[in-house]
Length: 152
Image 1 (cartoon, rainbow, N blue to C red):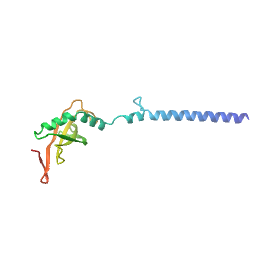
Image 2: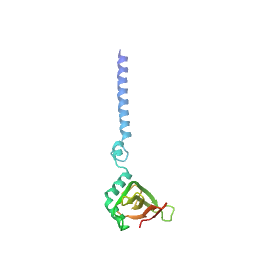
Image 3: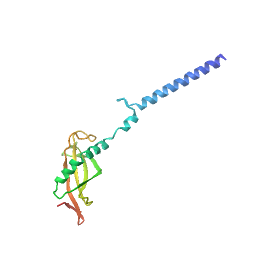
């Protein structure tokens, strides 16, 4: 009888120990080693592309004004937000010159027009610009006679 009681007690202790160790392992696996957040909390964080797209949308008016200044015939500007890309810029060296956000658009509600604007990134491809600097990457063009021509 005493032997059965010891076995039952040892079984209960072993089971409780296994549950405690297993629970600790699960908790540790869910935690990030370098922060105090869990993986689930980290997934809620916005990815770099979404942050960059939000930045561009927040500056839509400035981007549109820049595009309108490129040609006096531009009355309205439409952006293709899905076209946003981060690209390498070259400066003639193997390591390149950095990164730039590019965004395509059209004008005057004409689907046969397009242009590309660029916003430089200072440090890496995942950053959001500190200051809005806009470049004309491709001039305003129109599709006619089977080819792309400058919009005049």
